[in-house]
Length: 98
Image (spheres, rainbow, N blue to C red):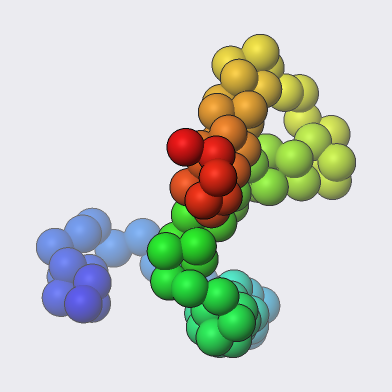
């Protein structure tokens, strides 16, 4: 869908190497296709409403993994946001919470 927009941009491709092609293939298969297949596999075991609520945990794990792997700092607002995310997921997946 974005391919036609490529022609509206200024040319920035100066040197496309084999490493670039491998990186694009890895990102398209590893990050997109594999994640989609795993999500659909996980969705087969739980309801769609629970799966969509659990999807809200993705930013929380993104911040957590950036802290653990990349040694980034976590701000107070990120901690507060993480608590709100966990509370929202708990309320939406637990029938007795409301």
